[in-house]
Image 1: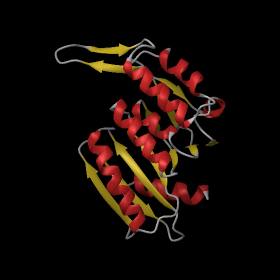
Image 2 (image 1 turned 45 degrees about the vertical axis):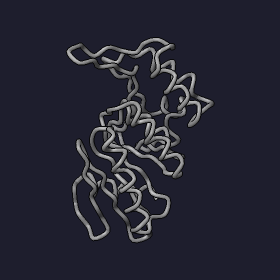
Image 3 (image 1 turned 135 degrees about the vertical axis):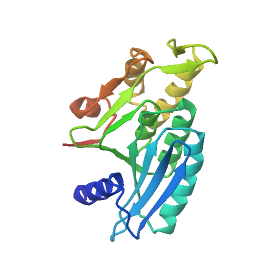
Length: 203
């Protein structure tokens, strides 16, 4: 199974088109839907997490259904983006019972989507998930961190984490709140398993 999933992931990352592959672009990135002969499928999100990505996800899911995908994987390759859209996409991923996978860096809002997977795989030596406090950007002002437990973003993330992973939500929130929005705490390997970030680590 992992060999086939990884082969699909490599083909998508290498932009190697196939008859059973479709691309759905959005402002700031794209989704790629790829299907193997046995109906194993990957829906890849590559780019910035935004409202446009949320809308495109529905189209990508519909394409996966059209291709006859059975329980598709969501391959995540993103530096992050909007907190609210990351939570919305993460909820959609969990409600669709999708499994998540990354071979590279999935950080910030991407990490929240990753946590929505019913299974969560880190594959390869460069696979890592990055967390930090939410940021607030005002016009003509520098980026500021929402660093208290009274901020709206804290409450939104805590509710979401409590829904996707109640057993580890508090520990994950501690990691997030200890990491300013100007940096990223990367989690990989055994630490990812310990915190419940990943359900499988394959090097």
